[in-house]
Image (tube, rainbow over all chains, first blue to last red; front, top):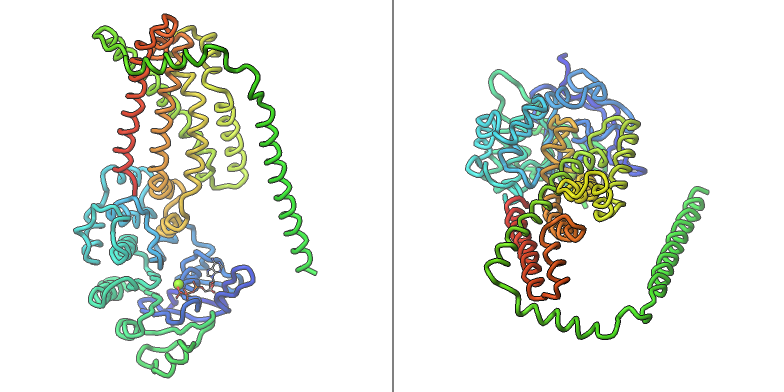
Length: 245
Length: 270
Ligand SMILES: Nc1ncnc2c1ncn2[C@@H]1O[C@H](COP(=O)(O)OP(=O)(O)OP(=O)(O)O)[C@@H](O)[C@H]1O
Ligand SMILES: [Mg+2]
């Protein structure tokens, strides 16, 4: 069997005494498009942060392309392997949309190049084409704080497109977008270029979009796995059970 | 057992905090009581002199000669303030960045660097600019250099300290998101901390420029030239109208800085 892109082996996340994710074991193959479903507080964000190396597992381990996540050097190495779009976008409000997008390059740029780019943007075409893919290249010069929520969300996605890691983690990437735009963005995130297969794990609150765009659905509830099935096998009964109040 | 330990600890911290509040309030009250409010701080006839001085505000001298002198001296005052603030920025900003501890990677080195940087800043600002002026006048004589350094050094201490705090207090989430895009702490600084702290840093710097203009005016009472010197000469001649002319120049300078600052801030702020 091929080495999986992501492998969780009994990975658990705790915040103090609160267990956000109970020990989970699963593998995600390279190129797979996986949606995380589950009610609010289920642990979707925490699971993505575990995979992205932002939260250390309290027990168990996480491997990305066969390497323990703790062994990956933060900076260039980790950021070329995995990138994350945060639920709250977390952009720098007083930089332009263009600069926030270009920040996706910070893992590979030298410090001098980064400094220079603040004065005269370096690799501008790269950022513009990423902004084009999410449909806001006309807003590239705008201060990010002046953009609407949906526009900021798209800048955050453009940043990860520039970063171009082999594993993309996206926390509710279309939560602030209208249906047509959501389709387009999900299309952009889930369509691979012919020469490179990207792995995508996204938390989704829209079951419909998850079914339409993803290969595999994982249901989380109170930090534990409720189901983990091909998208076509997930029934309405399973979903009702997942979201039951 | 564990719960009990916790309760005892919270009780004592609440208690000690309450005690601290009581002591601080007592010290405050005591200090107010220690000022001798009624013992001859106003001399007789003082009131009429005050009236005369205030009245002169409506009849400032506006002859060509005085205005020309005012402009020249205003320029000197601004030059001292701007040069002093430049020294303060060049000295205070880097030390402030070190004192904020945001660039350090290893804990041990960070503690040492933050320690000495804070100490230097505290030393700079614990001495008043007038005292620095006396020190520098002794060292380099009555030269503009003395005025510029006398403003620059204590202001470096103040700017550095405020910058350090502003750089620490930016929201963490955008910084984390830059880190996850692969940014080192230096890049996080350039792309996150600095832009987010910049509006406040700028407006504080402008506020300090205002203070610097006042300080430069006072500096000139010490004999270093500028608007304050002219105010002093006029007051000695009991020429209150003329003194007001120069005071109006001072007010105009501060107002101009304020205007400039709000224009710059509007461009930079989020
Ligand atoms: N940094 C933290 N400190 C303490 N508790 C946390 C932290 N992050 C998450 N939690 C807790 O962990 C649990 C899971 O949170 P998480 O953010 O992963 O949920 P989620 O599935 O993403 O929810 P939502 O759909 O509302 O975004 C929650 O109970 C939350 O309160
Ligand atoms: Mg979440």
